[in-house]
Image 1 (cartoon, rainbow, N blue to C red):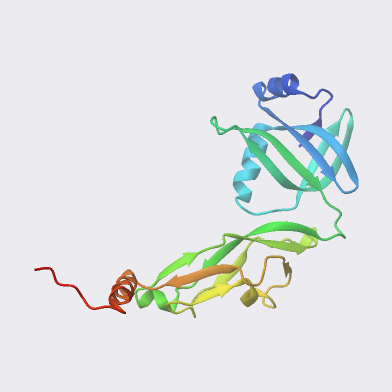
Image 2: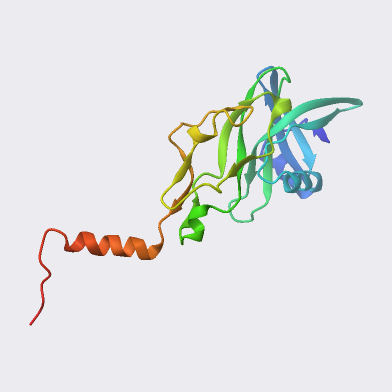
Length: 203
């Protein structure tokens, strides 16, 4: 639930926060920026439930005796630099028949084959940019790493055609990789340091 703000600026915004309300704004391609305020406890609960997801949420806006419901996504949450308290939030109103771009969390499943051989699994990308209709926003992109051996990687190109939405990131971007064991790396460095010259023994 949100209320339309009649006054804007630093002073009114500060007074809102003292009353446990968070200044906000709602905008969109067909919506003029609308200053709002939202209850702090409701906002924090919503953010906690969503985690890293981008989720379509109904925002009830009160303007005097009038109530309207907007379909929105949270575009930006501003946090105080050292108090770590939410100080402002941006809502983006969407048209349900028009695609939008959102960042979706990447979730790793399975145990990479290379890990059993001593390799180390490294997740490089934790979110990917996706373009889809608002009603089709995925909660997450699940990536099965079971087939990956030591030295192998999975790229964005490997995910295309396996998900029912458009991934906007470059095909060459690495999502996850299995690095060689540290002992193998050390051996490779040792061998390369002795190639091309004789070992020198001090007297």
